[in-house]
Image (cartoon, rainbow, N blue to C red; front, side, top):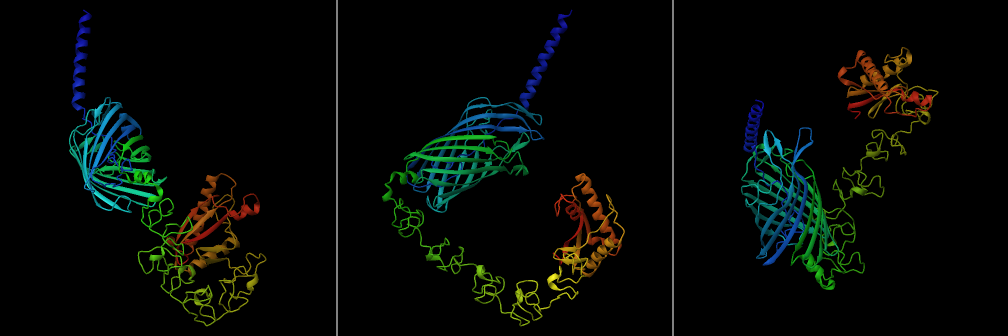
Length: 607
């Protein structure tokens, strides 16, 4: 009696398992060529970029690139945490070869062989995605590229071409798309002395056009950029490479999952003529599908006819890359035609008498250092903004045309002296009143008045000689008004006082006098459109409470000014607490100085 139900339950469980398995299988999505690295054709000095070394007739290059990547196809949840790595570890051996025909056309073939892969299955948006777990062949690439202009070793070379990816790879192992791909592309490269660079731009037309997980497989724009240096007679090349793509189908451009971007730092070494070894390490810069957490590359190539190999194999005294008659072994500027010199640092370099980096034969100002420009009439000349013939570096008035003078303070300035006192207007503090020359910019060219502001306090003891005030026993206040506009600040010579631990303004003449003085300054200067009232405290007590108190005090002062006729739109309040001390908080005097209110111009002529 008991055995029957158990048998029935077993049959039901088995049927359910078959149903679930069938459903999961039906919902499982085919993989695609997930490893987004697109290696250069064999013969290039880069792993991904093309050095446009397309020369020769029948010149052949062969090589293998070992490519290990870690977690290259990962699903991240909304919190940015990895949920599953469909491709966790992947080792691909890329076999490649190229041949150059007619000195300008290169045909290339690349065959990726996945020798190891593992991962974890995942369900994304209700769709199953299997784990990579086996060896497989990838999509075979066949390419044709033609050099349009420039030659290997030139400052700029351009090649255009197209690559076809045959659907030979396994979709189950994320090694192929299952449909063809075509990529028209352009490669730009060059070198200057020991510096080399390269860039690549392409458009990948993909037979697959569909959502994948929460990403997308479809047409994309591809690109890469790199720069590096050649060392040891071009036997060693080191430099970073940045490459990536973004899907443009279905409006998915520049989304996180559809924009894999990666960086490599690599080196290539000619271990012997025509034999080159390369090594690189890389990191993913985004979390797009196909970009690994980390990548390692190791390459071995046979590149007969390589320019660097030929240089290395040629006796040094017989090579002269720039054709200036100075052998490369002695030429300090091996890629720039120059002249022989007894100075080893200049031997074979263009003559540059003024040392400004512009050779004399194209320097419009030989003997005077200046920057390089595209204008042959100013190339190598000092900059002269006002075009008065006096270079900016010695022009006292670089924005106004003038004439040369032996006085460095007047050279290049116009002869303007309206009051005829011998002090030019551009340095005359009183350009409309004849005066005398002084070392003080505030009084230079002003009448020799011992009391400039006529407040009864002589200039030499007046702390504010240009603002009328009253004499005071404190030399720092003597001759100063309670408040006055100076630059971007309304200066006050006494403090606004408050009740202890309160934002209530203390009653009494001192605070009233200071606030009335600030009020008068703001009324006298309607061009000052906005004032920020700042509150500050010393460091005693809780910092958060101090900041709140300073904000309340600043607001109290702003309200006082508003209540006395200042438009609210001209006022704002900010409390900084103990964050901006003027003095040390280690003494009572310092703490008193730090407890203050300040008035800063935010908008208006004070700015």
